[in-house]
Image (cartoon, rainbow, N blue to C red; front, top):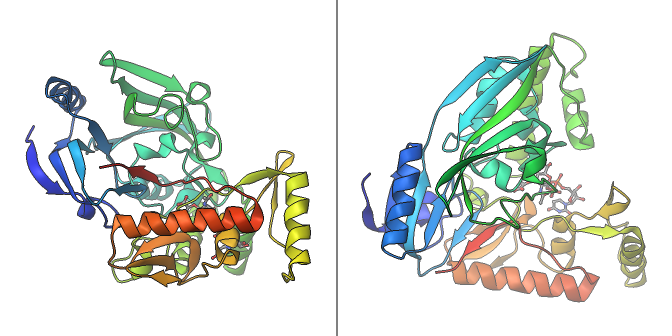
Length: 355
Ligand code: EPU
């Protein structure tokens, strides 16, 4: 395994920020994972695993240890019970290639997760989700290496402790395991279920999914999701400067109904027009962080120095040629103003890695 020195990290991230890694290597096999871990331990270096770089922001100073880019890349399908098909994908495979391969085979279960940037390994860590689906819905198992004892461990879905944009890998066991493969249970001959009103309406406009066979329905959903994401600059596109982001920078806060009523009342009392949006979420209410960001004074296309918000979606903070310092200063101001104005503490979805 080749170890390089002083490798710029910005090109390995979708937001294009961050200084160099002191050491950098590419992991192509489970053996490489062990080698990288051993090297980091031997030289007493911090180790950072990097996937597609679509949810991470490195410091301007770079990373003082070893960055190991996950490139384990294989995909396999196996027949399961009934109409199930089990798909195994290596952590380094591009996530959208996985979705495309499943959809091409007419398999349903992940079509709403089309067009999400990043690689497979990151998907169970933050329980990637969009348009009414999340990886927890189809995941069977995650194969990992325990960094502590260098042992192989497999977690089933329950053991992953999934929640909204979270799992044991993000919380209690942060940085303990290296994910090297994910196994999903997909279905053949099943029409997708459309749970997200915006998606259901857009699919309806394109003829709906009731006509035609299930594989055609799965294809239509994928195309529609990609179109919706493109319209919000949430589909990577070098010609669209809005896509130099990590997608949603913050999570959508989930607050008690009482707090939501207070938000609505406070909004009206201050002369706000219309109602703040909110979606029922297991007895609580999920409030779009994008709405909070916009109405705290950071509308779509807000610019400050080299950073700002996307002109198509206020939740995406964009690098317009700035620095991590500028981006984090903006994030802090947004957090402060949302708290002051609405009494809601935003939680970051993006992972910020200190230098
Ligand atoms: N909205 C605004 N301003 C905006 C954009 C949206 O006020 O600039 C409000 C509107 O009320 C809109 C609502 O937010 O109806 C929801 O917007 P959207 O459908 O775009 O979804 P989101 O809640 O902002 C979440 C995920 C996205 C995912 C979409 C679609 C989080 C943090 N984000 O965004 O995930 O693609 O739903 O399912 O849960 C990501 O994680 O990086 C990501 C892009």
